[in-house]
Amino acid sequence: MDILPKKVAVLYTDAKRDYFKTEALYITEKDAEHDANIIARYVEKLGIEVVTFPGNENIIENLKNYKPDMVINLVDSVRGNDYLAATIPAILAFLKIPYTGTDLFGLALNNIDKYLTKQILQKYGVPVPNHQLFINYYEPIDMTLRFPLISKLNQTHCAVEIHDNSISENEPELRERLKFLINTYQQPIIVEEYIPGREFTAIFLEGLNKKVYFGEKVFNKPNQKYVIATFEDQWMGSAETPKEEWPYHYEKYEDPTLKEIIKKAAEVIKTFDYGKFDIRMDAAGRYYVIDANANPAFGPTEVQTAIAYILEMYGISFTEILRRIMINTIRESAVTEKKISVTETDDYVEENIKIQNSIAKT
Image (cartoon, rainbow, N blue to C red; front, side, top):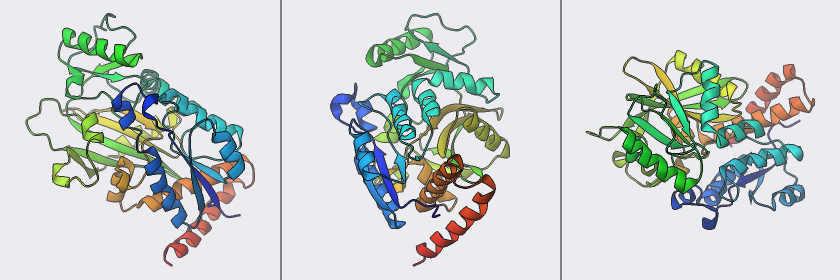
């Protein structure tokens, strides 16, 4: 049995401007088809037949007709709604097609409720900032919260509405910010204490072993009072922007303690294959997980993803990332379907890696 698939479908967000409430939401998705095509070319280089499909109402018919061995799931929203992205793994599970990324439960949790995600992390001993969920902008503020506070959309990722004015130093500023966000996006807002200090991004990568790789965000923002990675920082640049003009870059970082924190975080919120976690460290050296992303932006450095930039520092190419994730997906599916036993998988994967390495050298 070949552990790499013969036929792969890459699913991407069907991004139409009228699906999205704001231009910012659309910006985070507008290149979905372009990015999927780039990833498909990497799949093709591995000798695998590949097609791309939008994650829309035609998905079931398209998949039934194509009959892929597995799916690379890149769908972040359906008709502009993040929470509907969880329907994609549900459909794939129903059709019994192996797929990359987090399952229905993990994706629904992560996309629908950042607050609940943080509550679960906290419950299991993963440190997070003190936080509060606001349904209305006039709700009483938890007396344990200390300013400055940062406000985030509870059901939207990709740093949407994270700007320099997202940090409030007093109650009037916070009330004004909450009113704008709730009225504009019609969703709850999570407010948490701003943690001054160093910031890191952790990439969780699952295979035969669970690995964590860190990149410290080194900011190019001198004399700025509150240093954060804003929406503009993450979405308004381009791959052609000179590195000296980047708002921040990544540098290697290692800490076994933080590695165990991230592994636990990935486990308790059901992150599969790959995930991204943002962490702050305060002046006392204490870590706080400030964001958790199942199925984060995925792709090579051409599409400017954190996973590619960080793993490249460790000598891991996007081809290797892709191959590792596909192997893990097929392996897990084979174990679930009882086509192979768990004890057989080590030799199974090792032999396949030898085969693929010999192909790569030709």
